[in-house]
Image (cartoon, rainbow, N blue to C red; front, side, top):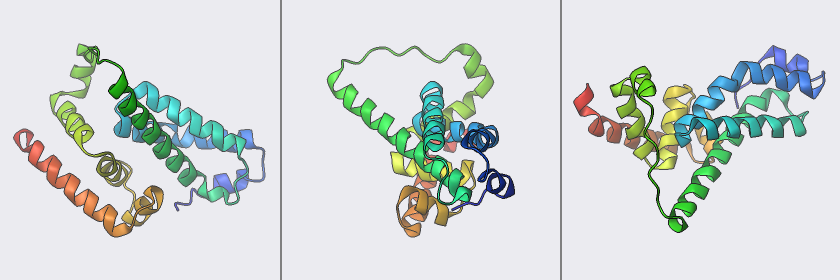
Length: 175
């Protein structure tokens, strides 16, 4: 598990509000990015991250305060999976509707290539997408990815390899 260093250890002695607020300021944006990349829904991602921080606050102090970031990442991934699972079930029973297209402004901001990468990433299986996001967007080592996802390190490596091969094939035109 990643250690988040001195400030949180010192805060472990303080109250939960101070400790969780410091974590929120340091890691909120990165956790939202993780959830967005897994779910492809900014609003739902923010809700998932907020829920993770709320649960952390309720369970403070942790047995090991240095593990707080790992706790948050795991909570965000697990909740994101739950949201995706519910959406899949809902799609089976609710007739499809036309979702509004992304705004022209967001298309311009993101750029066509970035949108193609996002679409290709979203088309990957959930586990493969999670491994790639954790590895290449958060720069986590395979050992930590394996621990966060509850899989073996070799499985994390093979998921990353397969995912990169698939992305390379799907995105060969934008190189």
